[in-house]
Amino acid sequence: MEPIRTAVIGIGNMGTAHGVCLAEGKVDGLVLTAVCDTDPARREDFTRRYPGVTAYPDIRALLASRCADAAIIAVPHPLHSALAGQALDAGLHVLVEKPLDVRLSRARALCEKAKGKDRVFALMLNQRTNPLFARARKIVRGGELGELKRSVWIVTNWYRTQHYYDSGDWRATWAGEGGGVLLNQAPHNLDLWQWICGMPVRVAASCDVARYHHIEVEDDATLFVRYPNGATGLFVTSTGEAPGTNRLEISGDRGKLVLENGVLKWWRLQQPESGIRFDSAENSPVLSCDYTEIRPDQPETAHRGILQNFADAIRHGTPLLSPGEDGLCELELSNAAYLSQWLGNKAVDLPMDTDLFDRLLEERIRHSAYTPARTDNQPDGRYSRRWQVNW
Image (cartoon, rainbow, N blue to C red; front, top):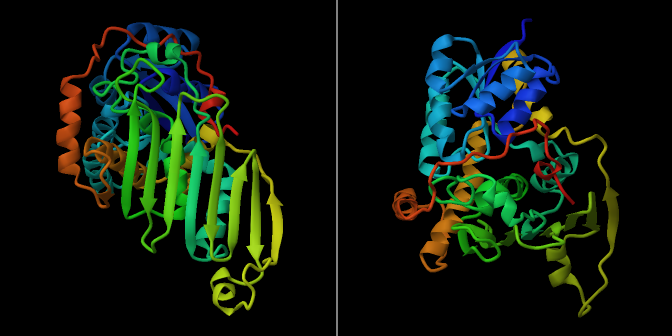
């Protein structure tokens, strides 16, 4: 079977890394034929390194050339759904960088469009390739932890300096990026949180703007959620704490999971707590439980793993690990958190009011300091360690 001709649209830091991965033959079944970027310096640099790849200044020229059968969308967040939609309309298979968009309303429209196409539509949720998260999902969704009681994820090791935010004019602005830590770094964790525990029905949040950096969006956020069965969840993230923490704890009727430092710890009660609570004649009995430590049984394949899964889905019909539509869940969590903050930290019921969110976001975009005058530093094409699971 011939490899799939693939284009990377947007060759900033992330897009260049994907492009280099394909150009160097690291994904079986995908061959890089084209890149697209509005920055001539980036186009020149990439084609100098990989002369067999054609560079285009805009997506219209690329699509008109019919040089690709699949596209990887790696442009700034607010453009994700628009350009992905154009690629789908042109008949291409599409993989979008996270998030699907900055607005749930546009992301939903993109997913509806994708449903009407006989094309593979995927999202770059690379941390789903970590075997410990997959095992935690299996335990929780399979019922081995019993009914959910509480989930708490403290993920504050997304540390960034002011230099990082100053490296691109679009970064950390409402008009250029569409949000802060919840839109850029934490989508991975928001996705895994709901992937493992399910979606809540209510979100209340505190999203602190410029708490640690000179930016116009949040660099610290705390979400309090309520699940359908009454269980609660807490999610804490920040780019301003060092050393940070990455600790996920999930409690259920049959025990507890703790995922930290690359180890999944599992306490399994020998009897469900709900039974002991009412049947025991003791005030505070010591509950018997089995303890297991689970370590990765295979490496985290990260971005390359999602690209390979995308290729296998196109060529062999392999189920997607991160279907595009799955991105709606984590985006609704971040959108709801912003809306809660804008409404005075009021609890927001899900499904959320996307019309209200869009109006309030537009107000912030109108007052944004974003002026497109600079680009990021020239990308080196390597996958940064900061983009993978960091314990």
